[in-house]
Image (cartoon, rainbow, N blue to C red):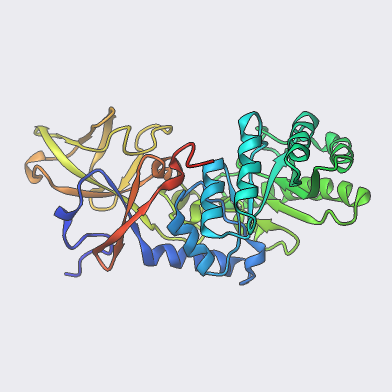
Length: 369
């Protein structure tokens, strides 16, 4: 019998819990994303919050992708290190983040850094800091297209744009909208919601064009709406989870072509009684913001997750006599992005063998800047 694709040839070479990445599958997912935008890499701006890794960003670059989105200054710094041509901080910088972003811009002059703005106070503070540092910052107006988390309302876009255009330290490039509220498992409903979000961003974009014809860019969406925005030739898409994929999106977004490229490796550490086992897969090993089950076991579908603490996961099984201490299980996290941030290194797997490690460098809040 052929061994499943995910099983390591030498399991004892890896301590658990561990996060394994399957390099060929990572590359395949990148190519599938590029294919979804018709092969035009200028229409995709991957969000690196999922991988936080220099090596994954380098794989994007090797595939011809040169523009990215990030959520933290550390992620922006990794993009500078990897030589990204364009890095958008999908965040309105406040406090020390303003200075840190300007420092990155000066240290990595080959990377064009930009950020979001949704309030005039932030625009003025950023402008003042840029003038003091003798530089300018490219910005996008963040538009609230339904997420209701950040972003200016449509009604405020014109006034905000006029304020930004009058500030000499800022250069307004376009609009940005994130529709993370769209994750319904019904593809028709997601398509309708994506259409509505796009029309809101398009309205904001038209407002900007009336004020300044050079403001031409629209950046929209994440992974759930990627299926629909990828077909719009006038927008740049910014999915992130696709590179590793996870169980939550596999269940909800069945029309998307991506495959699991990152798995958790866990072991049985205790046989509690005739129907219960304990695994080394606690809160510190997998994102725990969702209710149980928080993982999907590829080689243990019968394991029922009934409890979890910092270092332990208790599962119910039909007969614990069929299991051994140290037995290995491979699991897909429900949510991969915060799971990645729990690991210093990713174990790289090629054809079942360990092929090195990728540092999750941007899991730190601060690297150098």
